Amino acid sequence: MLSQESRQIYDILRKLTGDDDIYKIIDADEVLEQLDGMELTKVQLSAIIKDLKERDYINVKYFTPDEYCLLTLKIIEDVPLPAAKEETKQDGEDDDASKKERISYAQNEAKPIKAVKPGVVFLMAFLGAVLGSGVIAAIALVLSKIIL
Figure (tube, helix red, strand yellow):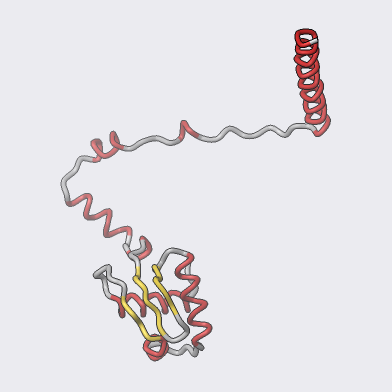
């Protein structure tokens, strides 16, 4: 979730860029003028915009302390869930048909990992080293008999 400052900055950027999926150049002073009851510096605004970029709320082509070329992305948090449920019920789909299309992921649950004692790990590593050395020694012995 976003902090109140980040959410307000995102809403202002969304209003300034629109919903047409085109990068727009926005002046930092434009954003700072539209803040309600908050005093931010350009450095703080840059930090919030970097945070929004890292969280994939916006795409930024470039930015300087005074202007930003960015595109706001549509986020899932903007869509109210009850409205989405009402739309599906109004489409006239049967609940049984939608249940058949669902995929159960309960079968793919991860099994709990058992802890291994450190002594067992050491023993297995030692046995692997001994076995590997034995194989190399046998190959060297066979090659020395063939060559000499």
